[in-house]
Length: 259
Ligand SMILES: [Zn+2]
Image (cartoon, rainbow, N blue to C red; front, top):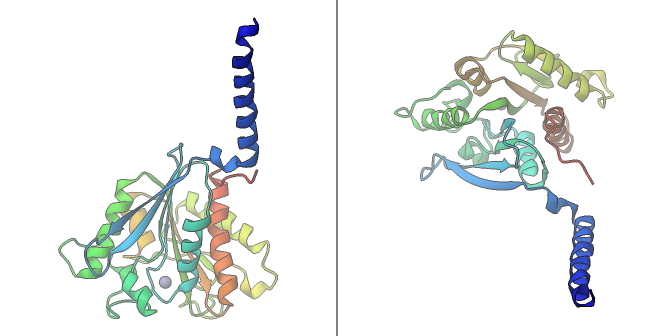
């Protein structure tokens, strides 16, 4: 009996150290890995795609920002999320700067005459923006995407000028599931908006050739576009864009619980 005592002490020690490690570093129990791949690799439009994986593959949510380079809040939010988000379930695909040249030039479209959000599903033999669109479309096809979220901004409130989509969630069809989901998201977002004029609303306005339209109509992926209004302060808009994505991730039980 006495011979085994050191061994018992050894295992006791291992046990106590393990418990202490778990207590001090609970995040070590979350196995989240981020990998980077590139679309349009080797061209001027080369842009990173961040793929955050957990032990549980499903669901996959895709976040696109920077389709229009001067819509900063979505771009900043996507970058913040890829650096700071902790998920414990599912897969998250983030493209912070879809049109990286437009983002670098701080312009809506680059080149100015071609709108990335009108050329989907793109064309591998077409011009550089059509090629870019085709690569993003191919990425959507590669994964089993439960929801695609395209982050945008508008220069004006929709309620002031219906040509602009500021403070809306745009769905590209009359799909009942998308309408219910968007209504829920708008309701959640509006809880913390004090001024009525800044509240969000759901818009059913299909824009042919847009990322969300193409995802939904050509690939059957539920997709929506979130639009903040650039008349509001940038810091507020960034927070709103982050909040919008986080509400979606908690709805799918993907967000890591703070321990
Ligand atoms: Zn836009």
